[in-house]
Length: 202
Ligand SMILES: Cc1cc2nc3c(=O)[nH]c(=O)nc-3n(C[C@H](O)[C@H](O)[C@H](O)COP(=O)(O)O)c2cc1C
Image 1: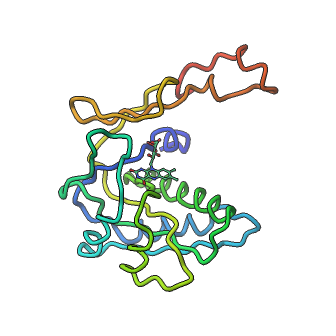
Image 2: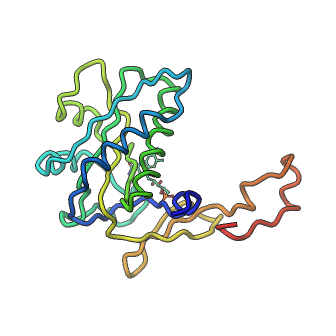
């Protein structure tokens, strides 16, 4: 698939098939994170790959899903991720968090290219995860990326009036995104109104 289409098509997935993921694909996810841009090339991040079913089940309650959905929603047992990549670091600086964003994006995009779904999670019980996975001090947990084969197909809605995703009566997740014409400024800030970029794939 064209790389642009991979990037355009990636959506956060929170419902997964219960089908194991080849370990080589998961290793490649960590490998692209390893080579992601890093401020001052400090490379402060390390990764714990969790695939063992009992450990995945133990990790699941430490994760908080889809905060905008009402009533509160969490994947059912039959929809839970089949693998996790836990991002850890010894140095919690603002630069580390920027690295974390890039590393997790690399993982999510490679996952999409491999037909996997992913959800980056930062609303997580970090200390509980640290203890559960025997992560020593001074490491801390930055993020978890949940992975698995997709069991849902969210759709993008070009919307400016809300940032809150929602599920419709059929359970389909709708994800509002600001239109390109709202975020793209040509040459200077002032020229934005002169542009017309309406199409999402434009
Ligand atoms: C840094 C970061 C933290 C996130 N944390 C969570 C989380 O804790 N739980 C969750 O369900 N989704 C989480 N998400 C997923 C966002 O809700 C999702 O990216 C957003 O709704 C846009 O949807 P999209 O990824 O399909 O474009 C997080 C995303 C990012 C980038």
